[in-house]
Length: 202
Image (cartoon, rainbow, N blue to C red; front, top):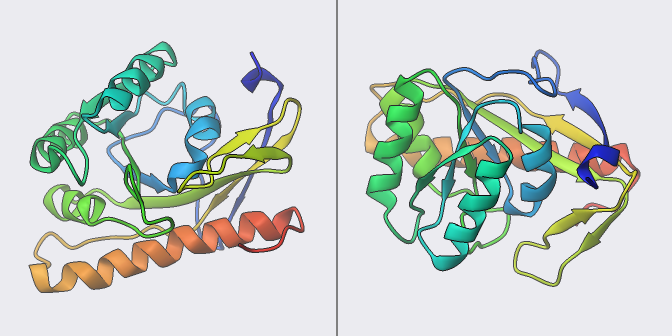
């Protein structure tokens, strides 16, 4: 009910076509920082996307909540069940749906992309969309990810950066450069969102 009071606005880097609120997504990969989970759940609730969720006990609770919002989940993470999770998301892409990652994983470190999304993009040919959701007014938890809880009736900017493309024939030696490219894109989206509201970049 609180989510119904939020007002979303979208910004994007030049040449980027953002995904609109309520738009059905295709065989793509979306990446964002873990702190944005709550507004992301509301913004993409009609997209039909599938989210990678940890196999932990907390992950089971998250999965049940996500299904209430119309998402499906693949269980696995960078720390537990990584291979099974990626195989599950590969099938998601092959079936024409969108796979969503919290790019800095279930435990951080904050603002540091894991390799899973790059490997998935290389295996499927799907592009990676980088974005950040920043509320103008929010409570910030004292957690590793500085989890954001948007206040009722606040504005939330959805900031998109350039897409990352990973060639199908990219050797493993090139994965780190692509990971850094994706990391930089998500960070640009975050910084631009903070600046949009005149906030100090953390």
